[in-house]
Length: 124
Image 1 (cartoon, helix red, strand yellow):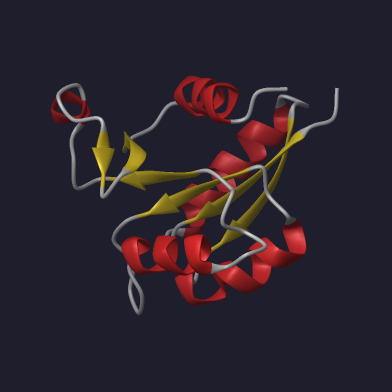
Image 2: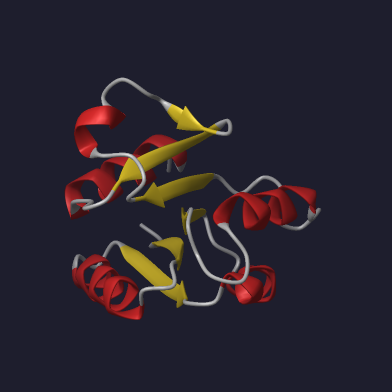
């Protein structure tokens, strides 16, 4: 089976690196990380992800604006976006299903949650 391509966009490089190494360690995923939201479109066009995990709060440009840019781009509009955020706690997340129409995962996020989310949004 071809590995799923995951793009992680978060300004915390230690977080994206750890998540990339962990996910790639499963052998099921190819992961690219972006630590500057302004570079997301450029990297996504090159990497061609199956799914994008996107932080909400970032300097320079927030996740909502990045998501809007992705959905406006004809090459990327069909790529599922899932927000990763610390602005909603895991407890609060049980009562809320989306942020601005996009599904989300509350930080801290488990690898199991990421894997389940990829499976739900990117069927084989």
